[in-house]
Image (tube, rainbow, N blue to C red; front, side):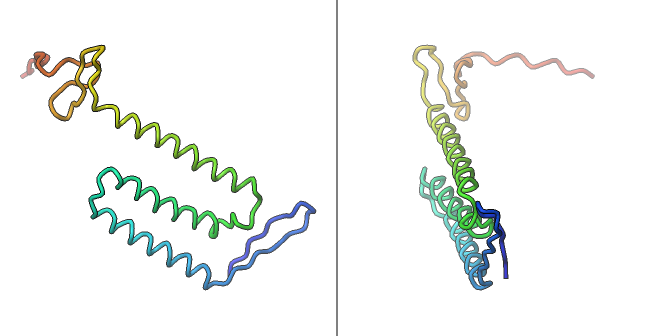
Length: 140
């Protein structure tokens, strides 16, 4: 059996004991979610692939944090800290996703085209019709 101790506000130690079957159930849920993650990787959902993968990963991380890290029995500050970290991570992912989504547009003000993957220049780069830089001479 697993135990976890935490001090209460009055200085006493409270012990939280969960049965082994409980942890085996959480472990089984994590294994099932891992199989779902692998299965979802073979399904083409378009832009939703990333959302589905992040949702499954968030569920798995929440199970680990809540039960294996004992956040359900710990101080509220620790839970708030963890949730805040995930919130800021989600914000950073959102900004990155927004940036990636806007890279495929043409900047009309500067007259640049953007997709370097299809032979065109990146933003601020030379148009695709511009001559390439000469190659450096080879030394023998």
